[in-house]
Image (cartoon, rainbow over all chains, first blue to last red; front, top):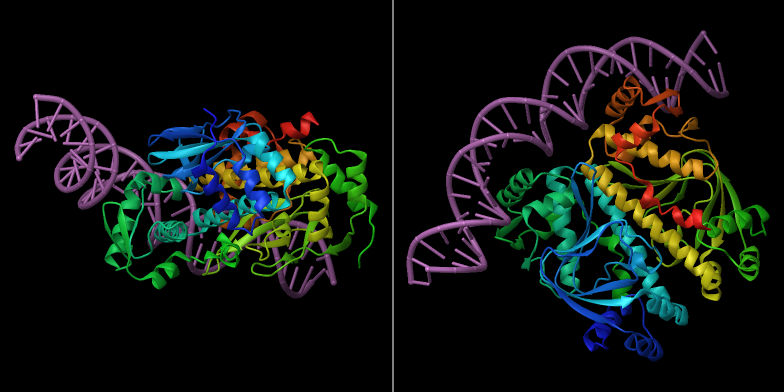
Length: 247
Length: 247
DNA sequence: CGTAGGTTTGACTGATCTCAAGTTTGGTGG
DNA sequence: CCACCAAACTTGAGATCAGTCAAACCTACG
């Protein structure tokens, strides 16, 4: 079902304006894009590795992640996403998916035909630049994850994941270090940090005992944001948020 | 020193044509770009984290890597690069470097002012698409590295690194699985895989004892390419080479 | 030939994993 | 409203992969 969906257009405009102002013409171009809005349930796959896609998904609400599998069934989450994120910009120009995209919670997404989005980018330098920046920031986050998984110990890794999550969530209006919901099971945290669920559990407890975090189920509070960032080695410059602030 | 450098232009054209044919006008645009060619010695930094840059570097010859550091001095290499690679496309649109770029061997690079390259991309959809694809493939490689470092054991990690290296080197005409030079110290391999140099050494020996590889100093031969790929869990689709083949 | 950087080896330590058994939680149907 | 169930979370004990530390050995190069 292809419909003109105001909510999706607004979300995309808001996303792209994080990276610099759009002109009225640009906004009109975006509003004219066809969107197919869908709701998916928790756990549902939006993209399967190896499949071909001719559209891009914008996450309107809910949470999602990208992940890859090893030959022997190990799973690695390589990024997570929240509302406003464009989860598969790679399909704008790459035919085959090299990873999976899966909804973590129930979610609603807007799918945009890749050729239409490409055309929009070609017609408008502002739109093209914004999409570019989104991809470049995505890549920057992957680099930070390589560092996180490769060079930090279990506690720091988990702390870093939490710091990144809350920073991005807060920017999207979804809570603050004081109070936020982390919609991940401990198994998913393990898959994102390259650890086992058992060890994630122990490290979360350790962070709790040290007075860094408090949690009830998946509702978290960071009690000492400064020390938490220190333990995590978290420096948000890799998120390139200054672009957003400047705008 | 800004000069019109035929070698650099040719390298860039060749790189971009991997992703699809360029028209004569596109090639002329690229030839008209100003290049500043520099040679650097092994170990020299091309980009420092946190610094601002207004140009992009094309690696003409030699090897380089990108890396990041943790607060406590741990180093993680997040990618390596060989001739033909554009090592800092992120600076096309992101002001501050979020990682370091360092020459691994003596190298020669061509620097292109970012604004000129941006202008070229704006003027030519073919150039824009090619640069896009390069960035998207870069990101795909980072995802694979997150998986490699997060979910594979030491032996497989190193095997995977070797498989990726030889695949990309062979594509650039720098040897074959039969015979190639891996210009990395064991410490650099350790920094790329999230291990210690000591353990890298032992795992390389283990791969040798199992008849997977033979090496003399840093000259390698893969003795059983099929089993090597198996151990590594290496599937080259994340490199999106079909684009190159199709062209 | 002397030196520095890189590689190799050995013995010991320790972080993280594995396996396996509970316990809690939230949702569902009676 | 309660009983039950599956999924998620916790806990403990023992095993193992990879790290640490320290010394010795190459090898290219000045």
